Image 1 (tube, rainbow, N blue to C red):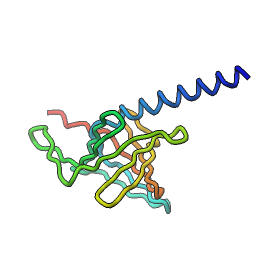
Image 2 (cartoon, rainbow, N blue to C red):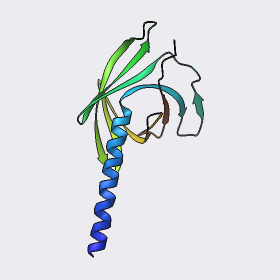
Image 3 (spheres, one colour):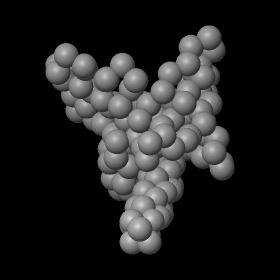
Length: 135
């Protein structure tokens, strides 16, 4: 019985650390790379001048749509969308509230280079980390 409790505790600690690492990895600028709809159809985005910028403070965050400028700064457009993050059944979820709309996205993967969010309707969004062009 002690072994079972120990295994469960280790599993919980590992999953918590994994989700904390995902949250840290989400912060930053992300270019949309691919969208896969629930019916399996795909849409690729070979180039986009628009990206999502995620900022996280504690359990809250903000997602902004931005575009880079020639001087290396960013121009924000549209209203920022606030969210909270939480763990549900070992998974990491972002809960957004945009005006009258509310939606949830599961963080499937979050590393320094790749972010995959699964919308509650089944749509999968794959992002690549934004890296500015070398000058």
